[in-house]
Amino acid sequence: MTKRLPALLLTLAATLGAAGGYHLLKTIPIPGDYGWDYLTADSETRRLYVSHDKEVVVLDLDSGAILGKIPGSDVHGIAVVKELGRGFISATDPGSVTVFDLKTLAVLTKVPVGDDPNAIFYDTKTKRVFTVDRGSKRVSALDPKTAKVVGTVEGLGGRTEHAVSDEAGHLFLNMQDLGTLLRIDAQTLRVTDTWALAPCEQPSSMDMDRTRHRIFIGCRSGVMTVVNSLTGKIVDMQPIGRGVDATEFDPTRGLVYFSTGGGDGALSVFHEDTPDKYTLVETVKTLPGARTMALDRKTGRAYLSFAKLGTVAPATKEVPRARAPMLPDTFGVLVFGE
Image (cartoon, rainbow, N blue to C red; front, side):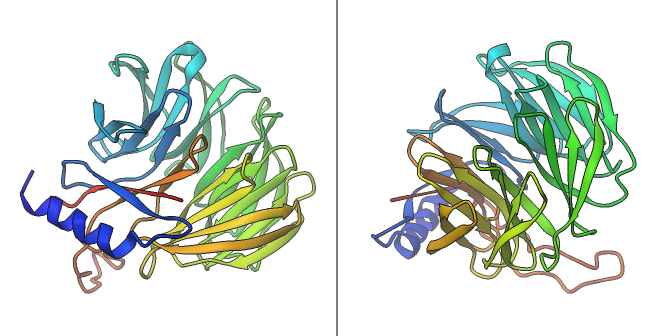
């Protein structure tokens, strides 16, 4: 670790750590100059799983200490199945799920799935782990006990994005380039409904209130969209920042969080007044590129992966949508709370 990292973190704390409402509590530095994707918080065991391209870094939710690392290649998401003592990591290599032991963090096996699996989650109703395979435009269902694929949803025909389960027999999946929301039977693996989300464009992140049957969708066009999961009806839309890539719902506090990495970066927090009415509580400045997030539902703290970014290179024919490069020794996790 270079000596300039602590100085950078002190600067961030001074910039973002204003008192009142949600604000920066601390930053957790993580070594390694490579990219990131999802984070998963396990509030019960007090662990935070941070995808970090070549590995998943496991942190203590309270202290921020690094507890261990799970090796991988272009890793994306992490699902935890506590009753089996196993975790599952989606990776683009070109497409697999790494199964690991939750206690020792040792890799148990690797399961091939479709190309470029992104989102991954566990459904308690069917006792299956699901991956959203963007490259193959499909969803794969795994039996977490046998670590085998038991079925797929094929031919989805568009760019799949985030997904969620209602834990009652249905999956909901955003089709980002089509601007639609799919309802899928989690047992038969058939698409039962396709709902248009316009004027939401590029639906991306997602979570839901399972008790009140409401799905919260972050749209890259800069709005949050609330959908009735029983009917597909849009019940509310409100502006958020650009570049959304994470949505979290806290049922205890009745709050919905949207993390947007565009512009200066922001965390938008809404209160669920009724199932069809939402009030903006606050918009908190984060950092450019701090787009993915996990929520600790015990403390209400939000954890966002970040890195200090350089200047975006001009677009070329080979790279029409270049990303800003990560500056060395700046990767870590921002912790926001009240």
